[in-house]
Structure formats: structure tokens, C-alpha cells
Image (cartoon, rainbow, N blue to C red):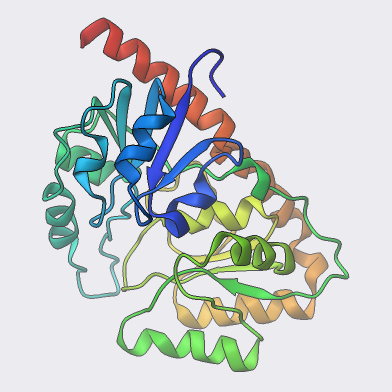
Length: 288
């Protein structure tokens, strides 16, 4: 990844595995004795996925440069809906112990500003999950990788499961299951947990797999252009309609799928981590 630099990753296995290079040293913090295993890795740089459940003591005593990566997507209000709990989401991020990290990266610029992060960058997608766009004759299976949604929003997922053969394994499925589902699906459905504008890490997973992404409004955009790189839905009815339209006539969306797959290169793990880790090591060397 970085010539001469040993890199290790640490975080919850199912949540972080899709974003870690397949050949990288990876310590699952939800498994046995992660602190010892991480120390034994002897890495020059350690990238930690700092979720609410990350055990801060895991990085105690490490000799390498430790980066904390905050994956949270912060909800933003939309004109049509009641304001989501933006401040509550930011408060949860502020409540994490970030003192042990030499540099902090946040996926969402709002989270980065809230904690004074060194940089804002999306969580990358592991290179082995990238795939070519499927042939147009392949089954148009829709896939939803998010977790539970609130209240009345559940109806769109229920309709998708029974009316459009939507597959929804729940948030953070095991890596082996996720890889199989990404290969089999042709449509990525991105419905936010609450009425808001968000940009979840699963967005990049769908694009990298060559899916047609159908999503509610994304914020921040991270370079993705609605109507060109993915299908933007203003409401849940438009999500349902877009999935139906693709299943009826896949060729109409061929250009969007190709564009989305090309844009996924912005999220390729080998490139993103190489750049961020190199910059961080130079920054630490220069400024401490």
C-alpha cells in the first residue's frame, strides 16, 4: 500500500472489513485480545474505525502513528421534513475519546468540524469488492445494506422485499455474505434511516460493485452527480418507481451504471489509504 510502511487496521469486523484491503493486517476489536494482536502487528501506521463501541485502550502503547477514522454520517434537514437530530449525532461523535490518535479523519465534514479533525475523507471500499457492471440480461436484484429505518419509512423496504425481490440482510452483514450479495445484485437501494440528507459508506459499496444506485438525497455529495452517476429520489415513492423502471427496462440505465462505476474509483481503498497515510506520516513528522 505504502512502500516500506507497515499498516494495520482495527475495528469491528463486519463494519470495517469491507473497507480494508484484503491483504492488510486487520485486528477485529470485537474478537479476543485485540490490544495484544495489534501490538504484535508492529505497524508503522494504524487506522482505527472509531465507532461508539471502539475500545480506546486497544491502541495504548503502540509505537506507530495511530489514525482515528470516524465513519458517522451526520443527518441534515431537508425542506420537506421535520429537522433530524443533527445535534444529537454530533454530540455522540464529540463524546468519543479521540485523545490517543495522532490524527483524526472524519467521513462527514460536519463531524470533522465538530471534533477539529485533521481531514475529512469518505471511508474507502476494499479493492477486491470492485467489479465490472453486469451484462444487461442479468437479473435485476435490488439490495439494501442499511439497518432499520424509523416509523412509516419501513413500508418502502417491506414493499421492496415482497414486490420487487429486495434483499436486505441488515446492517453490516458478515464479509463473506456481503461479497456474495454484492456480486448477485444489480441495484443498490439507499434509504436513509431518518428523513434527512446523508451519505452512508454503503453508497460507495454499491457503486464499486457496478450497481445502479438509487438513493435519497446525499450530503455531502463526494463528487457524485445525481442523474449521471446515480438515480436520486426525492421521496420514498420515487425510490420504488426507480427500482421498478430499472427492472422493466435495464438498458435505459446502462450509462448511469457505467458512470457510477467510474466514479467509484474515488473510493478505491488502495488509493485513498495510500494518500491519507502518507500525508499523515509526513504531517506528524513535521508538526508532531
